[in-house]
Image (tube, rainbow, N blue to C red; front, side, top):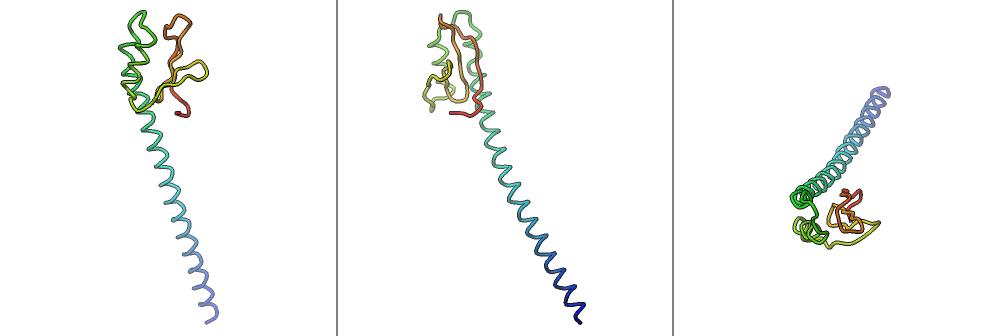
Amino acid sequence: MKRTTGVIALLAALLVLTNLFWLYTVIDQSVSRSYLEVSYREAQATAEQAIALLPMAARPNVARQDLVDAARLAAPEDEPFEQDGFVWLGHVGLRFDASGRLVEARPAVDPP
């Protein structure tokens, strides 16, 4: 009798432990999936904004303000700001030289 009680208690403890493990796994996967979804949406917004800028950026001697305006059309909810030599609009940073020509475009590592 004592032996079966011990075995039952051990099995019950193992059942509780395995259920806690599965609960932790489900919560961890849910959090990871939500981070992945946010990352996907940010990457998609960056790609859409970059594609919207391509026709304007491909033109020779395009003015700085024209590129900034095109980027604003792609991300109308974001206000442009300058930081580290780049004009940031949404998820894309544009760097211009002294004459106002586009030199570099960069995606935001941590979007503003």
